[in-house]
Length: 496
Image 1 (cartoon, rainbow, N blue to C red):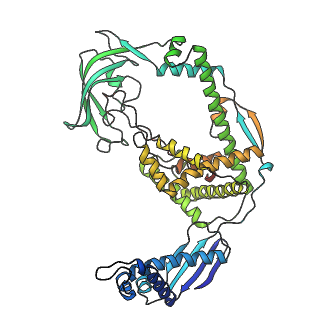
Image 2: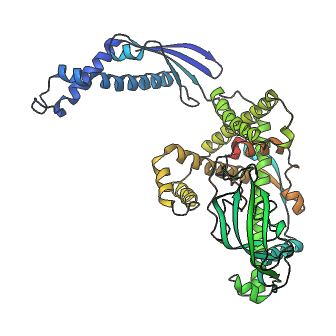
């Protein structure tokens, strides 16, 4: 086996590797001799099949396995002999035809290119100075949350036989939808409750029910949104023939002990305490998120080293795929509209570089601190992910069990958060009291824009969770607006 380095420029290394065909032949003979005692073929006694016959029958497939194994062995040897820590999988280019190599007519000669991990010394976390915005829960927040709870528990009562429907009323209707005179699947329902102004149905549907009375029959003319989830209906004009069966008005919910008990609390005081605790938890989580963002900005400013090109390319490819999707669907960020493709590529490549750099820095700090993700931590995360797919929990869990790459993707954000917490414990963190509006603002943290953009542009995809079957009379595919897409597991912020 001959290994010759042909390039060593920065993090980019290349090698030419040659394994003589005679050596491959010896490995094949050794493999045949190894398996001969276990070979059973018709016409031969077990273990007595001639080696020449085995070679004729199975030599090609066995040599293919030997070539693959030899390439892996040779590449590993080249990396180990040169003390190289690869940044991703090496890339191979065969110099001879694979068929000739397998047939024993040519040497196994191939070119290997590999990007190596950069060598750098991460900054001392104890030297970092981070401001963490904090905010106390204000009385108006508590009252607003209590009011929202009451709104979510709103009930309705009959408005009267001659009453007209107004904004906020619930109208009970039967409807049948059609496009160009033809009914479509999911376009009909009986006893559907439509709350006027709730925005639960496609634009124009609810508004046209204002003023109707019990017994009225009315045609509602609407247009399905261009991005509607049912592609066959997207952008189409439709007519819904409706019959009004009842009109109900909202009943004011009194926020008292009885209301609290309906929510499973002992008293109004207990409910209020639970609301305060929930708001405090939300504030704490947001404070931590803002501190993390500023921490990542500080780490980015502290480090400047060459990045593995293949890692940046892969990160950029993921981001750019999402950008192209946004361009196609018309959902491009407002601040990106009007920019040329070259401008966008330059901007998002910079984001990819930031994410890779921060990922390497956090990985190095975590390694020095011996931070690991325990099996039980990964199991909890997998279980939480599986619970998001009711009825498919077992399949989701099995997917992660059988897919090491999926486990790695699940493990990455857990590791990142543990490293961030470790750094925040060592860094000089100063709490700065701000208003709730400032705490939840996105534009006041240094460097927030690129981090926010990267987070938006390259999320992992996740199917929306199934919606509850409440309001069964209103088919999702016909009149309900499509559920907003939920981001899947967040892309590691360390790579922002």
